[in-house]
Length: 422
Image 1 (cartoon, rainbow, N blue to C red):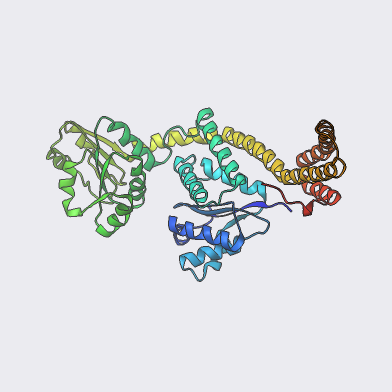
Image 2: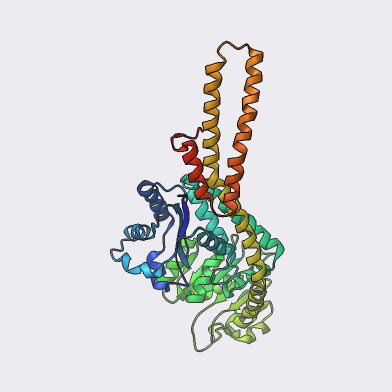
């Protein structure tokens, strides 16, 4: 029986955010779980992916270890009742399903925002972690590099990654384009509700920016800002921070405008100041654009841009899925070949051992010329003997009958006793 590639997945499609938060794993937890999986189950092809939207484990093993893996996650997270969360996990126990799911996740087809490029980078980091711990064998290496190549094809051949398809990322793209001529632009984010928090997390895509965050509840601002390396500003110091900022992103709930034309008039605007209003109802007076140097964008301007990009991405999905299917077929062909490779190597070694033993037995008194001739003849004979079973094994791969053929050839040539030389 060959080792199967499997996966288990808890994601935004199967579990609410409260459950995803409980199961989410940081880098250190992932390290510990990977090491335990190697120690307890001798796994050497494992990938653990954990983001705000999903926690997934991909692995190769003869047996379904999903329950054991979930228990390990529960042990790591201190969840004594983790068994109650089993129904939130989707389990993929067939090679094709697990491989296809990893492709779709890595490319962004399963993301909340279709085509989200962040997931591709997160998968690369997960793979790097596995590789650093020597828990990525030839199978996983080949699979991941096939996925990375597929990703490049999709970028080059489709519109799947064109434009920003989420409100928060469209905001980041807007800021990036309008501050491209400013060295280390100063950005102030006011409010870290759902949208504000998402924008804050996407600010990491502006590595040169100096980001400050403020919120009515200071502890909430600190909770978001500190892991990202951003500065926290007390809400009462907001006006001073607004005056200093090149960009103000406002995402607060207020019945009347928070930034008024009169307030903005007081700012010392050297060249221009970008104001981004992500609040509903709006928190910045539209008349602020009357102030020289002020540029205002609201949620409708940005959302229309994001919606247009999303429509292009959705239209590209059939092309993306065709490219993925081609890559899976190519990978699957390699996987089948890899499955029979140990049997072919054992067969070669078994026949070579017989050949060497017979040469040693009958050519003790032969001179070098005779030995070289017979050595050449027997090598040629061995290659011809090997040809038929090797061709049959590869043909069986294409018919999905490799396991039966491996068993037959192993029995005929007694290959179980042959150890592959490295």
